[in-house]
Image (cartoon, rainbow, N blue to C red; front, side, top):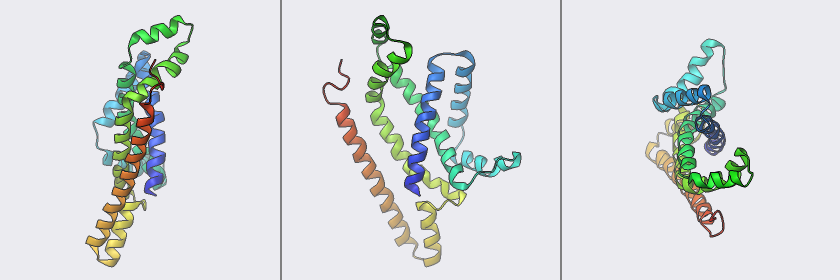
Length: 202
């Protein structure tokens, strides 16, 4: 359940981050203001409050979500705001001259972004992207407050039924460590491949 929460939330957060990032970069007045408002609200309030709001407050206006879906939405929206700023920083770090050169070759804005800017920006932000993924694994434990039976919630239930608190939570911690370490190794491997000569060194 923890892995499912992490994977779904990360994928959706990346999509949200890209959409919000593009809304800011292309400077459409209304979309840019909406994107900035979203980022400020999400970054200015705790993730736990956001989860409570989605699961417990939205039913007051007729929106009822299962606990798992509420957890995924809360995590995705939270991390999406941070990824939007990360993507924006990565894109803006690319020399504007490369964009101008691509446009002079007849590329459209979308083609330039896809083939020139984004591949290089990805290499710049990839280490930070991996760090956000690791944080998301651990932050998924907050979904336990919605009674989702992910790793932390399962540990709580097992500890309360067996009274072996130290053993149970030591095991929970070890599992988080193993999952995080495996994810870290995966991102390091991909990062090394991204640094190979010829993959964007133009």
